Amino acid sequence: MPKRALFNLPPLRGDRQRRSPISIPIPGEQHVYDSYRRGRTGRRISRCRAERQHHASLQQRDAVLERLGQAFRILQEAHDIAISAHLGFPNIVASKDYRGNGQDVVGQFATEGEALTACRAAIDATAWRYLMQESGMRSLMSASKRSEFDDQVSKSRMPELTREAVYATFGALHESRADMFDQGVIECFKKLSWAYKTNLPQKFGKRIIVSYLTYTYGINHSAADHLDDLMRVFHVLDGKPEADYRQGCYVQLGTAFREQTAWPKSYQNDYFDLRLFRTAMAICVSSAWRSSMR
Image (cartoon, rainbow, N blue to C red):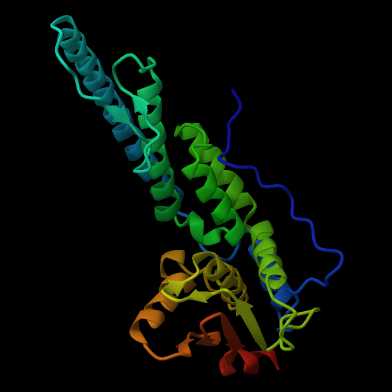
C-alpha cells in the first residue's frame, strides 16, 4: 500500500502579474538561498528525536484504543443487563471535541465501531499536532500550510496515525521546504493593501503596513503567521535556523500587546520595528537590517 501523506504539496507557481518580492539585494544572498534549497542551511530536524516521539506515541495510542474498546464492551454488557431488567440507562456519547455531534456508545442509535472511530479521530488529531510541534516541522511551514494542516486535523481529514503516514507527511514537508519558503513570502506580499502608499506593488519597501493584524483583545493569529514567513527570509539570509514558531511573531506580539495599555503599541526585534494600531500595523525594517542592505 502506498504511503499517504497528510496533505499534498504541489509545486509553487509564481504570480505572473506581480514581480516576485523575494529578491533582496544582499551580497551572497543567492548562495545562501541555494544552500537553503538544498537543505544545507536552516533548521535541522532531528530524525532520531522525531522517531522516538512518534514511536512512543504510536505505542501509547494502541494501548489507549485497546482500553477504550474494553470499556465500550463493558458498557454494552451493562446496557443489555439494564434493558433486560427494565431499568434505565444513561445516554453515553463519544465525541471528538467539546462541540458535541458525537456517536452513541450503546443503545438503539449506536452503530458498531462508530464510537471507537470517533475516539480514534480525537486521539490522532492531538497526536498529529504534538508531533508537528515537537519535531520542529511546523517552524518550516508557511502560513497557508499551517492553516491547511490545522483545518485537515480539526475536520478529521488526516490519515490514521501510523509510522508510514508520519514518515510520508514529514518527508513531503521537508522536501518542500524551499517551495514553502517562496510561497510564504509571496503570500505575505499579496496580503499587503495597496491603499497605503508605502506598500509598493513591485517589492517590499523599507516600510510596509499590514492590515487586520490586531483587534480589540489581541493579535490575529493568521496575520502573525504571515509575518513569520517574512522573518524566515531574514533568518535564512543571515545563516540562522528558522525561528521556533512557538516563540514566533504571534507569541511575541501577544506579549507586547498585553504589557502595553496605550495605543499605538510597539514591538522590536532584530529585523523589525513595529507599531501596533487598532486596525493595522506599520512595520519598519530595523536600522541594523537596512545597513546590511546598503
